[in-house]
Amino acid sequence: MDTIHLPRDIIIVGAGIAGIACALALSHEVSPYVPDLKIKIYERHDILSTSGGAINLTPVAQRHLAQLGVLEELDRMGSEGGAEVDAISLYSIRSGRSIGSIGFVDHHGNGYGGFKGRRVMRIVLSMAMLTLAERTPNIELIFGKKVVGGEETESNAVVHFKDGTKAVGDLVIGCDGVHSAVRTSWVDPGSPSEYTGISFLQATVPTDSISSRIHFRSSALNISRHGSMLTSYCDRDREQIFAAATVQFSQDDLSYYRMEPGQDWATQHRIKCALRREIRDRFSKTAIPCIREIVNSEADWMLYPVHQVPPGGKWSTNRVILLGDAAHAMPPRDESAAYALDDAILFARILVRYRSEPLSEVFDAYESMRRDTIENAFKESHRMWDRNRDMGMLEGRLKEWLMPFYLRSNRDKREAAWEFDAAKITIPTPAPSEDLVSLNSFLKEHTA
Ligand SMILES: Cc1cc2nc3c(=O)[nH]c(=O)nc-3n(C[C@H](O)[C@H](O)[C@H](O)COP(=O)(O)OP(=O)(O)OC[C@H]3O[C@@H](n4cnc5c(N)ncnc54)[C@H](O)[C@@H]3O)c2cc1C
Image (cartoon, rainbow, N blue to C red; front, side, top):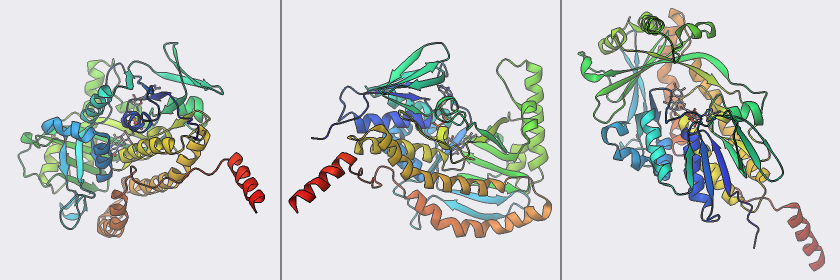
């Protein structure tokens, strides 16, 4: 019988989408082989908290959340569990003209592989994931533990926390997001995150505060030459509209608009007014009455600068691997959370498939299955984000005219991507180890 090399004490850094999904997937895949498996998730915040408003889940993300049991938990939350999105309709802010749509349903109105899109508040998704993790016996979540670095020996890895304590494990998985300390202080110190030049401005507006006709069914991307404005319901009962502007913002301006804990009332008031002005300057010249109302409302907009991790960096050492944004944060498209979920499910499956191999082989197999997909996604997200930078009048019109062609030409690629299932994709068999190769050739030579 083959020796099993599976880790028994697994440390996950970060309780975001990748971290919790990874813990759930590992518990499911590894515990049949390692009954005393222990998975500890260390999270820097003292309580569950997220940055950003609502998140769009593609059919792939929904399928993976269903496989992990999270979707059922979300559905149990009632209206807050999110709004179903069957398409994101595109409009020109300037003329109000419809310029296409990104559909999450096939020609028969069915979701891909049974799943459509969903827009849900981030905190609600995190609560659903956390509830499930807390119910899973071999997962423990420890809050208030900020990782600052680590080191590894032949037999284990040691994680260091800001409070001076440490934890020891057989395998460390860095799921600590775009500014990952596991990446920058351990796995690949030469690869800090960088600002993309684009930021999100987000707010939530009660639907009944808008008197004009709402121009979209579930979600709309309203484009202009000064960026784009997403408007979407984010709860099943459609009581809240989530609005997110994607706009060009210079790095120098960020500090002027940044809300920090502990700021006095006057500073916060100045920032809120400045952000409202920013939104009005960019989007109030619109032929869509509902957008005009949202833009001119007294909503509190929050600024989220978007950072990325340039591709090509290191993802692993001997006992540590990075997953999710920690490895490959890119300008977020609707797919980014799906990539974090794919990572988690694929990694857990590869670990078990390669259970007789050392961790280095597991990491190599994972990277060889993931690198190309991630690097192509990175390039594609850059092409898409480039359309959100500020443009002159002519270039802006050209963007509107070309959008329907772009949507049509990418439709097949998009739909194929939504069929992806990390739980089913074939994982290559481990290559025979050198010992086995020599044994095989020995046997061949001696039986010939
Ligand atoms: C504004 C915004 C909007 C987005 N919208 C969408 C969308 O609509 N659809 C989509 O698919 N994707 C979207 N994305 C991208 C998506 O949110 C990310 O791809 C996804 O959250 C990545 O998950 P993650 O677990 O890798 O990282 P994160 O979600 O960032 O989680 C990292 C976790 O690690 C913790 N942590 C960080 N440092 C440490 C440390 N040193 N020690 C311990 N814990 C630590 C953090 O507190 C956090 O809990 C958006 C991103 C942004 C910024």
